Length: 195
Image (cartoon, rainbow, N blue to C red; front, side, top):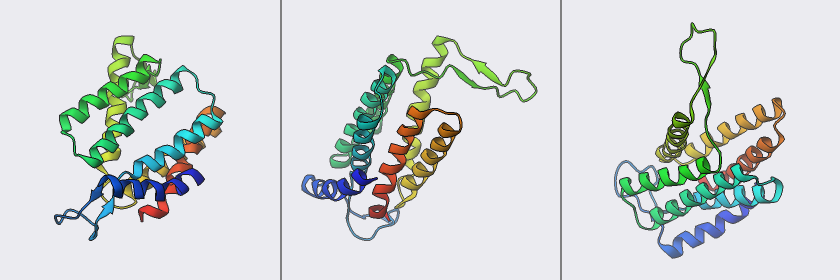
């Protein structure tokens, strides 16, 4: 929270210097004056610094962090000079493959058959890789698509991370709880600047 809060003004001035400014040109924009972009960088700084300080970084976490760095760098470049959607999609897939390479894979999903005795379906390795990549790319784009109103994406992300934090505490997963706490704090630290 502190890092996210303190880094936001620095990132804001950095965005002005680089020309990463969103100028309202059409009726779709909710804001009436130009505002700086790159808020995701302040959130990411709060998150990654906290994770590196308080979480034991194993191979899976290393893969998640490396993939997220690629997404953040792509977002910064896109904020300065808009990238083609197809190029962003390819980069997102490549970034999602990094955690998969480090062992982050969805191997079990809820069974959609409500009448089945088995509540879960296990997936083979060949299925778990595309399912994981689709999940990561889908969530990345879902958050990006709701980032049109001030406070909407950060609010939804905060609520989601807070829910995952509560679940991690309830099921005694301290590493996951600390990671989610870092994300909640980074989001809430940025929130006062995004309203």
